[in-house]
Figure 1 (cartoon, rainbow, N blue to C red):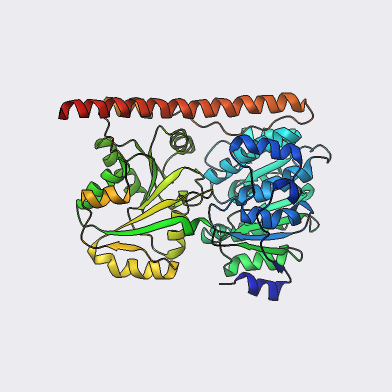
Figure 2 (cartoon, rainbow, N blue to C red):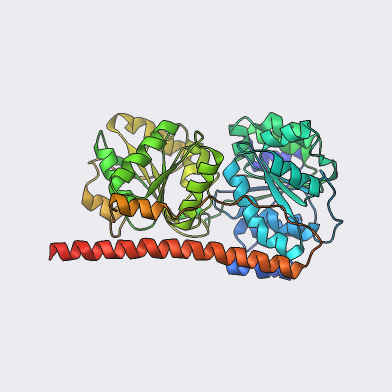
Length: 476
């Protein structure tokens, strides 16, 4: 593995210490962008944002390393919105900025994060990924867009068909670069980067710097400033890690108990079939669980993820496809129903909790026969978990995951999950119209989504309250 210090010696980048936490204004972020962050609960920069923003806003190439959940998205979306604000309008097929993401879910969430920033500066954005028809994407490109968020495969397809010309890209961003490498995307990424002008500003963000990522840095970034924000304030320090020794049916019993507790949980399995089966088993036991894996259509994936965002589905059972693609700040619990094969997957999965400075719990279910494997996994991840080798009693589970357990009847469960509606794909907006109207539409959209989530959670809470009162009456 190539660490940041090695990269600094061999590739020319200079490693800079993380800045002390300070205001967005002091870092140089324009006031209008700061104003749109506040309603989203973002009022002060995270360490990776404080470290990188002065250089990225100045137009320098940046290599940023930060753990999952460290706030990397706004570390590159804020300078993108700021630096494109005063430029010329985009022309057909020639986006002004390109953001590469490894998964569809991450691409959608990056575009959603950019929406209020784009509205504030009259900038348009759209997403490109496979699994859906290309015609809406082609039409958006023909209208001209400022920010293109894309997965490598579909982008190369459209480039080959002549629908995308990257020669006008002023800012290039690669997010989750190490995950790109893990998924075998680096050859495609290099083909894409070869079409971007050398003079374009380039920002690469990654949790780790493996050899393949180091090659990208050395070949395509121009004397980048390197920032690392793996400080004591990073999310991993706020996680409690536990290993439960469970065999046979005890695994499903323990999972049902944990997932029925208050709050949202993400449960990881190794296989698509395992995710589908486990979600069904949890629903049969009264838990509002949905699955997320590669065998689902894009509409189904968006619908299930949207249900989880809204709070109508309290448990998401996912394969590693979701390890980097889910950004939900209030997930308090991650469960490894199947221990992952290697330590990087463990860290990426676990990073779905303890986000935005919050605490989180990570529980690994391990059969007796896998204890040695799990010990090696934790050692490689530099994690010292609390090991519970005597099974998973109700008292232990109540201590690990406190709170009321709620089990829904089949009709009640169907009603709860029916709250979900397909998540809309971010649409390309026209540039040059009234910024006031654009911001107003965005505000209405934000209020609408917020209202849907609050209504869904309120209905779920009311049902849970009614059920608890019913259970209490029965005991009386």
